[in-house]
Image 1 (cartoon, one colour):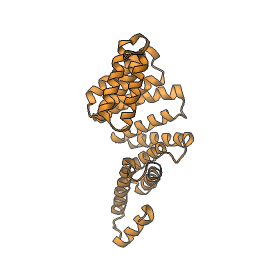
Image 2 (tube, helix red, strand yellow):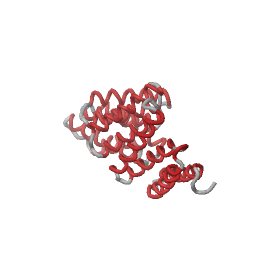
Image 3 (tube, helix red, strand yellow):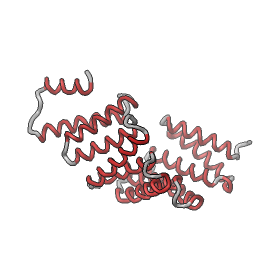
Image 4 (spheres, helix red, strand yellow):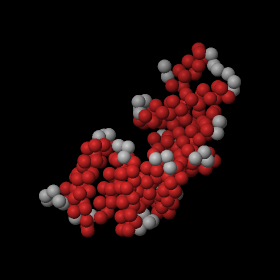
Length: 255
């Protein structure tokens, strides 16, 4: 088919996807750019493929810390998807969500919230309330509200997400665990450490079982559990004896 063919570009795109999943972001970027170059050379039939490439390139640039360039790519993807598919389409919602992630990484929580809400509204209208992608968007919104200090709203969205995930993928799933983690973090910020621990431990147990002990999600949740236990003890005005504390940790996490 030669180099300048959409099927060749799709192969480059798939190689980029694998490199991205392996954490090889430099090579992922190289192959995504090759795919984009071909899609743009035969643009009339491949406008949506080009938009997908822009979105993929933006994701990799974000992981490489190139947030401004990532934002440009996601905006290009959004413009194409809106022009071709319209505003109310799941593919249009994806770059809205990705733009929100970039603004989150840039520390602009108000902008991040704006784009997360746009993505959420599209997912809810097109895919329905009881949908995996809708639930993920709710978790994103909850995390932003937590960063903004609006803990009531944050808790509302994380609980909605957890209920959907429980229905769609079940309780013993990493995405459900992410919702439990979000609830635990928000409740900890509200200084209800006993309830926070309940959710953080649930999340940790799922992460440990599904993702393994060394996964960053598992390790981060364990750290949050440790901090919540310390704050609970401080709030009660006491510190457990070392022997008692060791026994508690052993029962909870094993030797």
